[in-house]
View 1 (cartoon, rainbow, N blue to C red):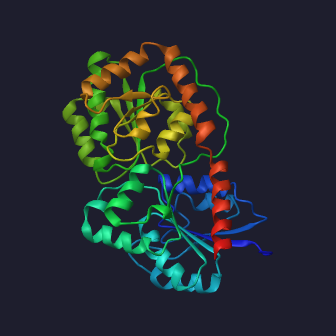
View 2 (view 1 turned 90 degrees about the horizontal axis):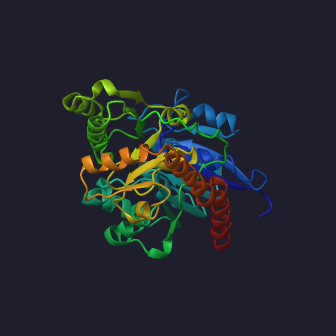
View 3 (view 1 turned 90 degrees about the vertical axis):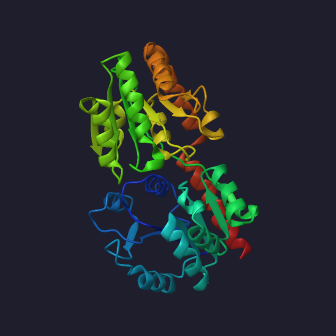
Length: 363
């Protein structure tokens, strides 16, 4: 193919989220001499968090609908696919995956790729949604997933052919960060969408038990979502509300990671979310409830917390780590080293470029 390969990345929105963070990390590394990249979002405007970052990267953004609840994309996306003559449509997140893949095939796009960035139980627990997801996956030439647990659900629940599915771990753009100071201030942080399955209630309960061990502990929670008010009420009931800083949605996590001494991941389903990888890359010691094999494999690079234990026992393990500042620093360095070896965006993009080329050659 003499001309550039035209790739449309389609995503639900440009708000704060792990999928958006992953995608924009990739966009830095695509070979612009070989690939022409266009980013389309189902709904976004110039106030969206990632809109200005796309401009800095020189990526053109097409907003298919300016408002979330006005589905203009049902008209504007077909028109874009008709005019664009794309070689690849790479869809991210739920609405984009459900709509993008069938329309890509309807308009004879040679390669349609689906990307599963999230593990939300509702997709597999609700028959109507799993049926819709399975139907849309029939139009994918390749389905990329961030974890083996999602791969197994797609095979067992939706009947997707295993040959279609490929594991693509999250990746981070290369950056340099100053080494963390040896002083440990006992500030524990967590971040993510404030939804039930993220289990930030566990984070708060661990906080209560930590304060019983040492009154110097403080806590920071970054994110927003439907559970925010109930979590604030829980913090008040536990008597720790004065020790918790609610950071809200944070567009740049660098300051957040610099402000904490340990990152705690207490969610139930996801394997290795982007925010955990970001924390480790910035040398923040991390603790995670090992609810699956992916997290358990990180033992030694993180502080593993047994899901069979209580929040009080998790607090004792975290408190024990804080008693040894040198051990905290070593854990942060091991985390950084692991990310540099296995979770870099540049390597992911090389795989993607090879995948696009391979699918187009087959076509």
